[in-house]
Length: 305
Figure 1: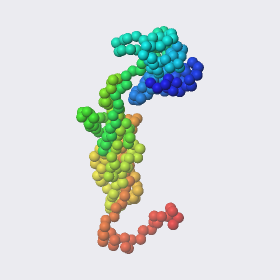
Figure 2: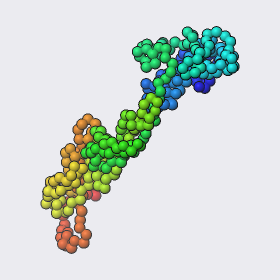
Figure 3: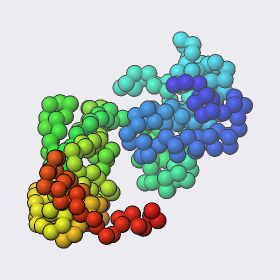
Figure 4: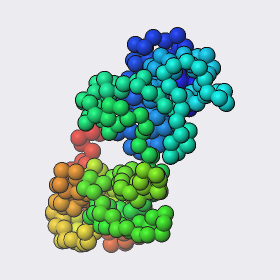
């Protein structure tokens, strides 16, 4: 552990009130309940807790200031140290500091931070050690085809250990959506970490996402536009028949209901089909027809030209 004053961010002459205030702020920020995916925060929480315990014990603080013990409470001399308030005993894990009855009371700190007494905190009112940290999380990137994301098709992913899992995509899935697989990360003393899967939705050659809707520019012939027609149209669910109204202009948009992406609310967007009249190359009959054709309507009249 670092110097206890540095760990809490207080001056060497700090009062008990200043020490408590500094610890309260850090404990609230670093508490393991709020940092389950951050082992470093758990380590820091343990450090500031030890620092608080030492500095709020007047005897131990004085011994540390005189250089008789280090930041961990261990004696700096080979034969112990003078002064009252504590000594050392030989336990199952070797030499451990014995703080007697003078250790700092954490009850008021945790009661204020986490809602009351030993029951409100996993540490109780007297426990000083933080729980063992979990293993590291493992990040994955999952590429999903556009149509598969829209229709929520299950996706298979291979984990770091070689095992495969079939994932059910969530409603409302979009680029950058993250899925957490609990316990599928690396092993640690406090249990396995998690797998964090980030979704990347591949671009489609002719579909484009617009919120929960899907847009499609659909080429149609001049004949289909003039006379109207029933034509086959691609969707993420497969081809469907669409009726083209008689006399349709380029840019006219038709709607195919419930052929878009699934939303977080459980509904589904639509497919918006924009008609684009496509003329054939070098069609002599069409060229001859329009040569003597003089339409009366000015298509740019609304623009004042």
